[in-house]
Image 1 (cartoon, rainbow, N blue to C red):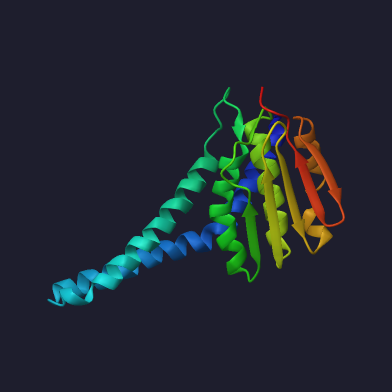
Image 2 (cartoon, rainbow, N blue to C red):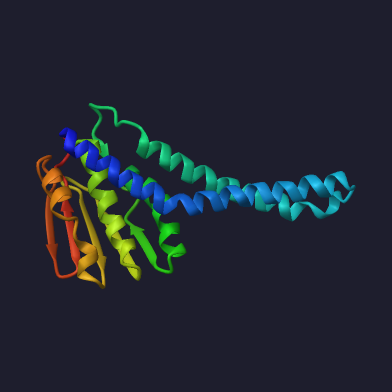
Length: 198
């Protein structure tokens, strides 16, 4: 990936972080508030009344952990020569962007996870393609859907009732095409075909 492509990825990563910041902070506040109730009630000798708050703290901590792990995964430099794992990238992006879409009054559904979907495309280009596709879906509001189909050449489809949501724009498109990712935009659907893993 070129230096311009790397800068483009950093810009998209900032958008992902910006979109997910509210949900990360919300989970952190949920942990803090629940633990404060546990602490204050325990100090007041009301130990019997803390179980529900302890469970709530644990639930919020689980959400927070998943979201922080996702941000750390996406922010770290991908390590060659391992092939990029589209399933793993989509899992981390979904952990951040599905709640962000709900928070904005829309919905985002990422389907087909849990299958082998390795590609020889550079990991940073794969991240850029998938993140830009998902961001396009949630920016428009409404219901966005992303489906992964693994196999020889993994395919990822993005669909939305607004055709505008299913476009990567010329800069992202030219960057990922240069790394062997094929892009098809047609009738409210965006299809990315990734080169198979060698």
